[in-house]
Length: 207
Image (spheres, rainbow, N blue to C red):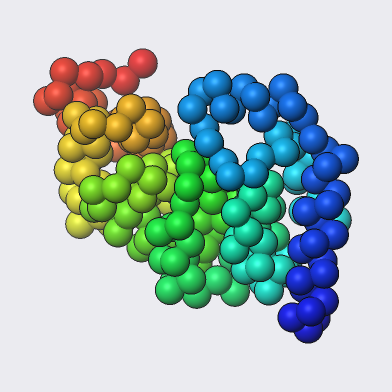
């Protein structure tokens, strides 16, 4: 598709959001302090249906991400083909995350499927920025759930970062880090023992 065609498609998509408008959802977000320049309050299932109809499209995803609209950014995470996204583009997107919701949608819809997901996740854990860390822990949670085991160096690095995050300033990151430790422990008995020992050192325990 040419650039004008992509721009027209984005325009049509933005107009269609009016049909999905949910004032209750949008108001609830505002009340919780989640501020978007433009937010139609479209539900995630509706956006997923739209993404399925659109199919994977790299250029459309890039164009949608540039829009300062909640629904456009979420849709971008759903239609971007993970295998086509270069690491440097991922770096740009993560720098531009506006809210916790978008960080989580990126992690679940896109980041976990990247060919270099684990590598990026460990980079993000080492950041001092909330949304970077949040994405890192959410991605590792998904990788652990899929049975992906870190190597010895990765284990040591992960545990060090997780313990730091669990004592860190961001509630969202503390919650995501703890969930990732639970999934890490579920990889097997050895992992469970390491997780329990690490958590015990900071006064926590697995449920």
